[in-house]
Length: 494
Image (tube, rainbow, N blue to C red; front, side, top):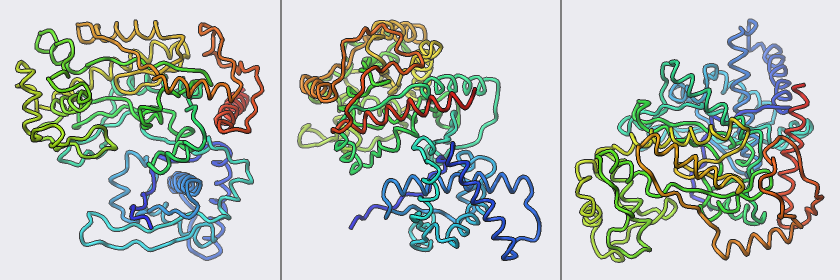
């Protein structure tokens, strides 16, 4: 039996397309149910109708998505008005506790949702243990009768997110819109529109997709709904942070990134080398060492040093030892041969000119700079409808653009920082190349095409009929489904 705590309702999930149209039937049925049971004495105001519709979209989106993940699994829904107030930015202006719980009670009464357990208070928890619910087969059948598409469940996360400082819990906070934030939001919209015009996927066997679920990576759903980006700023100011988050490709193990494809074609990843150390040294007007992460340890410790170095410039105050292997390299005192504090002091000793900057949180200021560099780099390509996938200080795109991407990255860094920086290519290992050749052979893929072809145009240029009865069949089906969905969406707009 699993000891994992069931997840809460995701306020960013919502419905669109045919599923969004079908759930409106529920709202009509709910109005009739209220009238027949004399639960409402007057007609709903326009604001009440908007509240009910927005709440129902989120609740139905979660019920569908969690059911697809595990029909027997549950998720929590809170009845506390405080939770709705604290999550107002994500929920939007219309969703309320009254409209959400009211629609839930209607679905439970119609035997479309099961309430597995009631919510209850917990003496040691900041908030109560939420009511656990899950969809019943009848609800899923209702939506599937309307030809429900995996594209119908989407994330509606705000494109510009401002979070409070660590002491305040890093909560999402509201901000006053300005010309600057509106212009920033417009640029993110342009980037996202290009991403939605194309299909990024992971060319791995379907069995590997299933295996990733055990690590909490549900790619079968996030490939469809986490295709857009948003910028996150920190400490209640637009001067700190600003990095792009939200893309599914950012949450997969780095070993899988070489297998990312765009529109079914291979990609390349280019990475800024030692980005923040070079920013730090440029900040104090000094030249950065060739490899600032080489502090006397063996090369296999470099990633650990890099992680610690960046933690020391991003954090204010003490840094806890790294002990979670899911978050990268861990610190082992016996293996390193010194305590955690001595390990940090050892790194600092190799950078005496930076001693006054460690522990100040200055790294968040540099994150604002590197996120502006990322934005400029992406906009260079998205203006031509060419998709580019950011992973903080690296970018993934079709390999035919390797040289242009390298030049743009170098130019934008020098423009913002005033110095040059090495840019490295993240190449496949020999083992990964062998796996990719095996993939291509099994799929019957013709790979000797001209990389300078106008592959980024919105045309389905596949002239090969693939046999999908193999381990990569689901990969081919997703690509075909994207083209069909995009074509039908384009047709509906004409």
